[in-house]
Image (tube, rainbow, N blue to C red; front, side, top):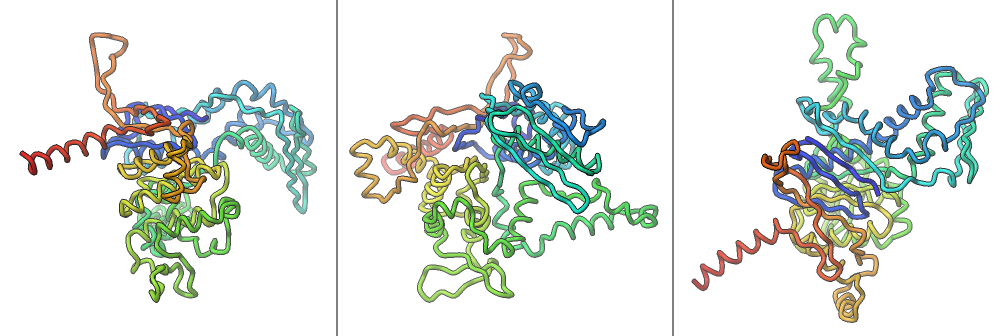
Length: 460
């Protein structure tokens, strides 16, 4: 299990999150839930680049790279995984501002650290990759139960050989530990309408040109400097835009998850109340299940239909076992009935092998998770309720696979002084019980207060 420690990230002073099969973060507005999700997303999004750079440095590949080489992963990585993860996360700190879409640089004390409870067994993995080119060939391989990675590069330029070795070693060492990640941000409703206008490449280029001074105009290549050619959006929003803009090109692709679990599309379309389809020259359309309803474009569809576009096409075209799917406010624009159906859909994803990280304000959503936890106890009464209410076995939730965190302000000692206290915004782990599920005080207190006020009005 991966563990993340955050310090001075957005509204969170400090927090620790164990990434379970289903991780849920609850709390009031402006308490740091989204910042936590964005920070984790950014680290995993950049993982391959960061880990490749780390491996290149660890192997001292910037020196002479031989055409034939052997690297012993026992000496380099085995038993040192947390040391490696810590160093890679440190390199991510310089990218945190961009990940969060912050206009000012984060505090120099802003950090995110990643650790694991167990060292993956690197020795048992086999690996083989051949990179044939017209002018050279590179072969990188490791047999099962071997600890030596062999590299043969005939005629490959040294700078390319160094890159291939580092990239392959990063794949061997970290691929079984760090998941591929997709995020659905809370901005997804607007993205679905304005996807054709939100051409980030064009927007970045135009902004770079507008910002150029007279000296730059004499040197047009200055437009393409990385510092200029960047977006003001947070990475999750930027990546949502890119994903939704490319949906037409992915329309014929069926994800591994959907191939193995075809009923998941039916479960999704129950929430949607219809189906997405592609129309020539019109792009993505929505057709309601109501008899006789014509297809409508996204700008004519309901907010529910627009909010679910990214989620639906992730499941339909991209999801695969081992992924991490992060969704900010899955209840967005959904009626309480559909909030419950969304909870059931995400549990289906978890049981199909996708890790899910959720931030939510919805009491309905959490209570539906509780129902699926209680049904998973398989008592005689639970089985009767499951049959009567139509819950599929893929919608039962093992409480041991769930972690829930609530944002909270804590009083802590200041610099080891037991007499001095300070307030710290953090995440607090909440127990998940097999017989009752999860209790979220921030929801329960609000509901209790509403009931008290209404009872007083009605009964005095």
